[in-house]
Length: 393
Image 1 (cartoon, helix red, strand yellow):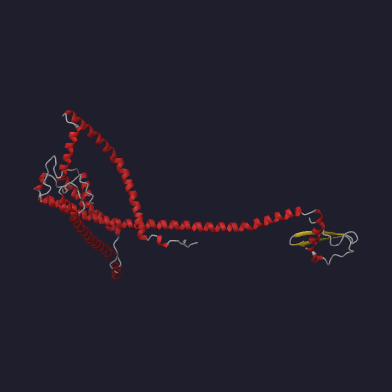
Image 2: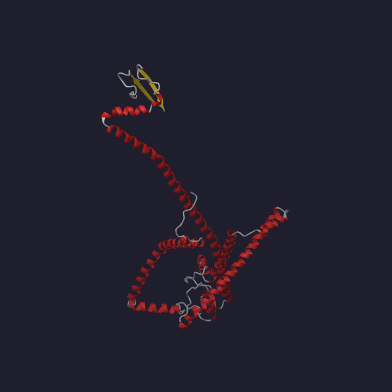
């Protein structure tokens, strides 16, 4: 019962890594569906109100200044095209000078992509494809190397703290402590916690700076930091874009350093969380395998129990059928065969035939044969044959 059922196509059984891939894909799809439902319920009413307000303002402006809605929409479309080139209603800093272009390429290679600055010429668009291909690859390599060094630094820090604590608690037994140190491995949960604290420290510090320099609230600055450090880059909040920021070189340098440090730390945190998520996938697969084996085991046990029950009931059913058939045959036999039936019954007691004689007077013999009581009455030889069986009772 403990054996697993043979599979007709062993090649169709996925490996554990393939099972991880399928399970993670399903969970991500479910996570996206849940997120879509939640954000739609939160943001859709505001979107509908904004559209209605815009339609009212458009009609009011067209009525007050005697401008047709078509002409007004054409003007707004031209403004959207001009906004792509960096033109704003309130004059900001130059987008394509050297500092502005450096800020743009930084958002490209870090995969943030705020969308505020974008090339408008065809040569610039073609160059961006090849430039981003090489730059994003190099940046991913830099992030991985940064992650390795951060994990090494945190592991050494944790090891030093644990060794110092052991020395304070137990000053003796250095050999055992050295052997334990050689086999020691850092906990992924502790490293994740330290990385989370580092990300929170960088984010809170950057939010304090942005709230002062950009005029945002602290919550808006925290929102911008997460969007930028996680390389999502919606573009609704962009730092260092005001006119007076051109002269604040210290703020521009601090902005670049905070972006670099925040993206690296957040990337490291995401990798550590992914390791924990993989352990969770292993637990889910182990639980599903255990449940499947339990179901298979119970099914095999139930099948064996049913077979045993049916095999026990079959002889009794057959004996009942045989008895019924025997009774039907006895009832169907003609009455003139009663003498023959008595003769057949007397054969079963031939072992006692030496006791009975032809000229013996009336005798009553009670025969016990396998718990069957047979009482036989005999008479004189001239009246009743000696072998005539007595009626059973």
